[in-house]
Image (cartoon, rainbow, N blue to C red; front, side, top):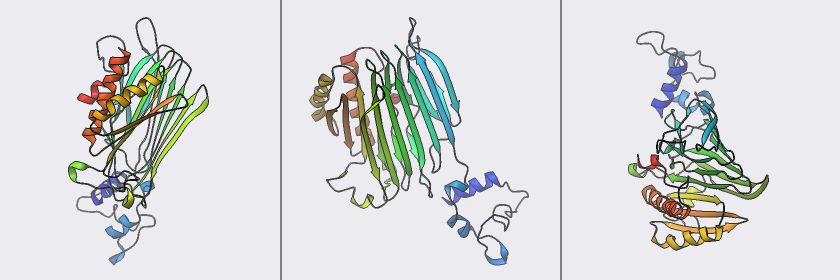
Length: 325
């Protein structure tokens, strides 16, 4: 933490002379506590730091696509650092997959990232991320991530980012908003991993607000929020909450043959490497997953997507190529 904070102050106040740190910890810093000899103490500076004092990201990515006789075509793309959008050619033909990249390497407290995907009539697209998103421990501000998915009639969209890994003390507020028209088809997944299991990290504090809003023809048909605050973490191990599970996911599907889709999930659920349950709510299929480790959750999601591909045939509802890179 000291290294990260010092790096941020160095970026804003570069050292003006060799061997001098006066610009970094000098009495000219507004509101800085003063130690011996009138110079600012390192401990005092770090105690008074806020995420608002540090450089933070404000990234945007917006994509509009439409269908044509040649396949899905790009209508418009807007991107602002650190968000980048790439369109790898999966089969060498039309656009089939969009890949979101966070060039910042992760998300810190106070960052704001926004992504908007619009699939116009007859468009068919899979949207994923280059890698797992990392949310670092925050000082006092939430990272805010907003996703807006708009799907027109006869369009198909699969929103399949890789997992979001929350470091201890992470603060995140994520909103996923889906607007569908009658005759559209969308499958969206978001998954969270609590702590870095390879490091043996445990989530003992932090704040999570993960919200979903689904609208059909402009009318809200499903809303859900998962919220976890500092006082919640000591109780997460209880059976009524997450028990032993550290990786959780929500899958939302809107389209045709919903009863068949629910039965499909329920048939394969006992064979998955995690807990899984599916239900229908006002014309939307909701599937919950909970696993002890991220790789078990990934295997379960891959299995479900493979079943969708076999059942639906060619289209965006498949395991993204980036998941195996």
